[in-house]
Image (cartoon, rainbow, N blue to C red; front, side, top):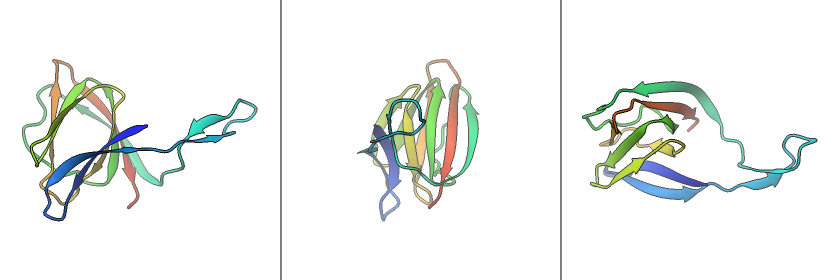
Length: 122
């Protein structure tokens, strides 16, 4: 699975990088057939975030290391190095830019966005 990460370098500049989450074949829910599944991730919390069209106009750092899963709507993410990416429903983003110049999340296309935020340990 392609995972988009927003991360900060030593100077606090934020960037995008793509990583691949590895899946393994596991007999996860017997008696069903084996499935492809990722290793466990230690999580701390989960919450939903509803953001209105036009949100946000300010760069901000993530308050914690977390996965953001866009469930509904469209958004554009920008990082401090100037790169911008548009995302739609189903996109998973690893927000790993705490204590940095941050990123900008702008809700697009006339529809509010709904995110599932999953806090990660570490």
